Image 1 (tube, rainbow, N blue to C red):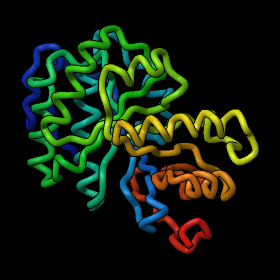
Image 2 (image 1 turned 180 degrees about the horizontal axis):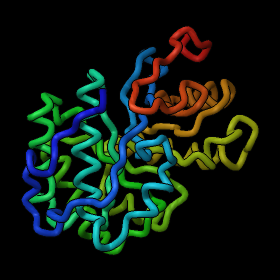
Image 3 (image 1 turned 180 degrees about the vertical axis):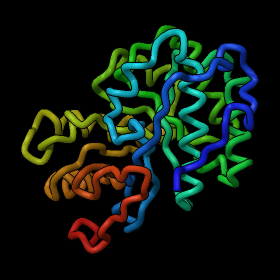
Image 4 (image 1 turned 135 degrees about the vertical axis):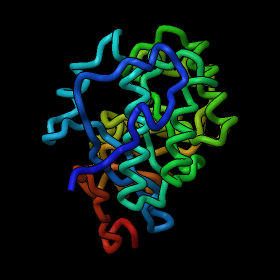
Length: 258
């Protein structure tokens, strides 16, 4: 049976820039975010996919300045609806396009309405802004993040260390979670330069009360290094690959959970 989502007609978006319907369909795969200290799944990240399991690039290639707002709004609605259908009771992490958000007070309404319709607690929704996307207006992004935090949403800065603004972005707003870029994570257990960088980031995170999350973890050695240094939130193939329209289980008997 095909997955059913709330339609644009069922959830009023409330923004003229978002009213046009998309001419393509898409869905999501979900990848676990784990807490190795608590030995549990922290949440799942919704990763956009084509309806025939095409990768994110296939879908994002169809997004342009004319449909960016509608796509961003539809992403939130579909991710929440599918997560609720799958019975997700953990954090749902959704990537959002910072340059697609016009006024957060108006654009967030479809998210809140969809969460209410699907009976999904909005305080379990995490919005990720990727540092790898150029931000046209950093002050506006700051306004968005502060508004989201005020509404009770979790905020995260993705791909930290690989983006356009770096510490300048962090100086503008303080996210709840900072996701360490995969290039820093890869083979960190045998790279002294990466280890020095992590040391500095741990100090910043402690001072600013930010939780760090290592993404792209593929080996036990990488996971063990981060765990030893107090980074307990992780994501990557070592734990589970993304599940197409499904919530993959994590083997809690892995050595890293011991």
